[in-house]
Image (cartoon, rainbow, N blue to C red; front, top):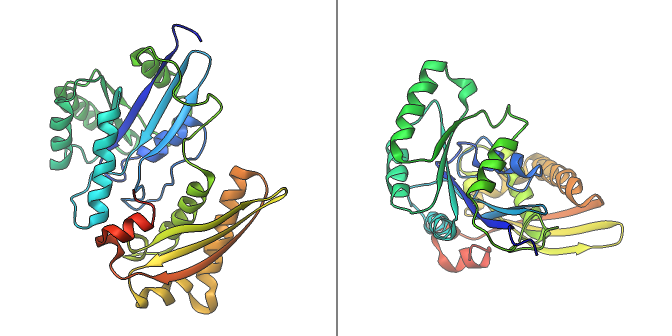
Amino acid sequence: MNSKYKAGFVSIVGKPNVGKSTFMNKLLGEKLSITSPKPQTTRQQIKGIISDENKQIILMDTPGFVEARYELHNKMLEYINNSLKDSDIIIFMTDAKKFPTDYDKQVCENLKKLKVPKLAILNKIDLSDKTTVDNKMKLLSEYDFMKVIPLSVLLTSDFTSILEELTQLLPYNPPFYSTDEISDLPMRFFAQEIIREQIFLTYEDEIPYASSVVVEQYHDLQNKVVIAANIWLEKKSQKPIVLGKNGQKIKSIRIASEKEIHKIVEKRVKVDLWVKIKPNWRKKQNALKEFGYK
């Protein structure tokens, strides 16, 4: 093994909907974290792994910081705190238009206490004027970040300089994962997340937040993948909304999920979906464990 090999864990933290998942997907060149315009789309810590002959960067996309109203929110905060404890580098991401909210300030103050290298990314600069961006950069620099990077994650295609910056800050370590892996999570987890993403993109109001997806069966056959999944909801009244008239909505979720999963597995994909009810699952620890929020 190369004695100058560098490897370490990089947490991406910030409020919901500031672009953390899109940023990680762009760095990886692969779509691992699901995205939607709605906040709190990411619920668990997702690791994405970038490896070559000199380095291994393990990116950890975390749920957005939220005020805990449900047991599910407590779980999400636990994932964030565990990521920060394990981090060799922390990237704080915020929105150029909205920074600094009270929450941003609280997070930045908490990050100041952690003795690891920290970078800040001021995202969505394309939606603000230069004076605003300059002012926000100045405000961010007061929080002891090693570097503040203004960026439009959506419009940027080359992330080489950020990857070089991260590599410089990484500690010397052998790789933690096999260098051909891009995540430590199984494909059935990503199938689950893709179905959930389609729910976030399809429905309004409470449905995305009151739903969870559990893949009960995942069969990787020679020329196709067959998946059986349950969509869990909190109220009986939500079920007809998810199904849609003559089952049209659930059919569109199924077809869109099959297309997205096909892009990853490069085989034919068949998804079967069932809609089930577990009242108030977000508030119940046992239900959260059952649904995979360990």
